[in-house]
Amino acid sequence: MELPEAAEMLSRTPDVLDALLTGLPPQWLHHNDGPGTWSAYDIVGHLLHGDGTNWLPRARMILDRGAEAPFEPFDREAMLSEEHADVSVLLARFRTARRASLGELSAMDIEPDDMERRGLHPDLGEVTLGQLLATWVAHDLTHLGQIGEVLARRYREDVGPWRQYMPALDRTAEAE
Amino acid sequence: MELPEAAEMLSRTPDVLDALLTGLPPQWLHHNDGPGTWSAYDIVGHLLHGDGTNWLPRARMILDRGAEAPFEPFDREAMLSEEHADVSVLLARFRTARRASLGELSAMDIEPDDMERRGLHPDLGEVTLGQLLATWVAHDLTHLGQIGEVLARRYREDVGPWRQYMPALDRTAEAE
Figure 1 (tube, rainbow over the protein chains, first blue to last red):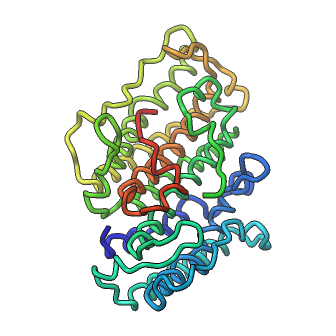
Figure 2: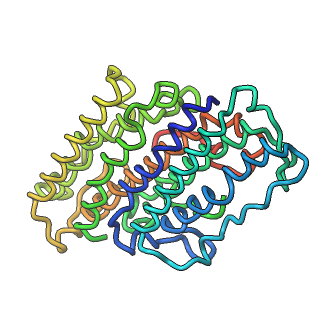
């Protein structure tokens, strides 16, 4: 994992989500797989929440304090208890938050050697800065995948016999 | 499934893929999960191929000939034997193909009643026009999900212990 290509990938996510979700009607945006599962809208809220409270704060903690104290636990479902804004508002907030995160990341002047610096995850134990930043990228991309799939499942029944060719139609989008 | 919202979703895919993939370096674009699996680049080729030979031709066949003869089988891996173009060229071809498909779809003047008209799938047997069109949409979206996930898997090892929280990192992108 190299930081410039990771940051470049992270910078794409707001545009990708805009292209997929801006102006999409509520029956798509809020479609989920039943109680306890996430809609596309919920997943964007989760990504927004992560930029504010998870990735950058943890990177800062590794650089400032190392593994002397564990990270704050990340509330993966915080977005479910927030008031619903229009998706265009939510996407604009995410764009702003991501831009701020990447600005701050760049200002940290992280060197390749820093990637091995350690922090303490409350459940996983010792992790490195490099692992944290790689996870940030992979987390964006797997949630993008999850958004594509939960949208697809709106047509789970409509596809008729083709369903057997599309295993993603029989998954569910839960907390990851 | 209603045709206008299905067509609107289909019209988004070129923009989503552009935002995610244009200018992405080859180590991302061509990353796959090993022999017989698909990279993000391969999946775009598969979508392009589908617009040319699968969805619209089959819809036309249902409207023109009903279930009197089976559809041509769709070669899901045709893109693997084609020469590699730059991803920007591939994405531009997909944009053009999708615009042509949607123009033709609109010109078909499909009415809600037509959704029940039947065709003959070479393996699945009788299918309806509505099922075909719903599958087209779901197929775009599940492959978008597959692209997000195969890109994420480039960091499968780099994420370290977080891997256990991300089951998508241990899937593989195969023909669907």
